[in-house]
Length: 622
Image (cartoon, rainbow, N blue to C red; front, side, top):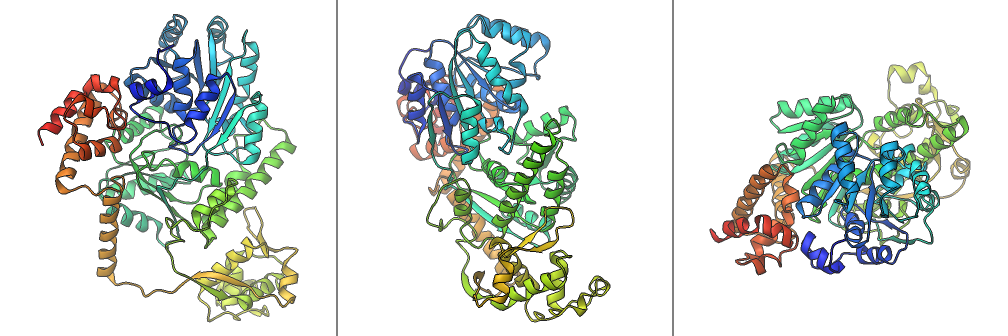
């Protein structure tokens, strides 16, 4: 137990003057002995909600965490803040593990991170049954629910462990993404007793969202990186093969980039992850195996070369951008092939092999429904941020001003006739074909496939020959979103009629939809100029919305260099020393004394004593 109140601890160890959002309410709930559930977006400071009470409670706090990288990162950060903490997982040798347990028995650690698989082992139980455990904090609590996107059977061991303890501790649970059903599951499975449950809202207003459908996805990604030199970011791909291809092409094109997927050796994965976290390589190309627990604060972009299988996964992965609160970009490059790839993953999911046939079928049906909603995100012309928030049960204004749809000029178009032709074509062919065949038929394509299927004899053949195919595809997508057509969730992806199809086809209803207003395409010079302007704007914005003069920018780079030097000495990632945001504030405030330096957000007493003077010295030289 560390002396002092919550405000003293917040400032002395973490360097902040005040709590954000729901942090204080959740901390007070824990200190009052209540179970709590905090649903807070990535970057909202969930970890402080259990770390500060852990330092004030009489006893040990066990933090149950799903990934090794998350534990290591959190423990390094706490140690840098002057707080003794340890982790117990498979990354330790047997000798290291038992030594850490021995130190834990001696009461050296107020906070211990442990993998759920370790809870019921003889060695850990021997320690836990003799220790005074004040709180169990369940991080990434959605992993306990079979209806969550990252269900981990090992999380079901948590309550069996709690029931073996001589005295039930306070239980706190935290997650960034949880629908209403998952929230109820967390409370039920973890047996939270009359919990203080707070959902702070899922909005991250510093993140810009966009969906793009380029013909050349790699070319679009390459162009993006060229216009954002020096920025750190993640490029997510759906498959290992795609990771290898994108990474290799980027290397050939001169970008400093590394890779991460489950097919690499443990040694290479760790090396590549460290290169990214320690800012040795600014860009990582990865599958969804990368990122959970990565607390790198200066990720300026997350690009998806392919659509994830659900919005929970997408928002979690996109949320790894801009954890420092600075502006960041989340762009999804979509292709219709992504739907087929994800359908294959759903049908061949090996994570739930232990489930009985009926439960497995229910989970697959749920996954197909979530994939449909993810696909609609890529189709919608409404506000992208609002679409995400509605999915998680929040309702906004349907205009955020910071997504690609809100920044696009739309016009309302009557698409009644194209819609009826598409539905009529599906009906007249007996619902036997996929989207491409239907579109080619109404557009009048003269291909071998159309002739072989005899779709050139279909009554709707060529009826929409004058409408561009990309417009027809937009109408087809809109029909799916409105439930007037459906696509089967199997490898064939056949277009099917719904209960509403006949009513619309034979009724007098008009169908209006928003379509992007046609714009004149700029020539090459104009595009280059626009890209340069965008890059300059981002450079200005990402300094916390504050313009840094040339002198301040030079000072910022010198402070970054000093931070890198210290990080190498301490063997920690640079952002654990100080975040970019803290360095920007140093450039603006220009502290000259210890007292002034401690007014900078992110500078606490412990960190100042370790290396505050070196930063003051660097600032004095300017």
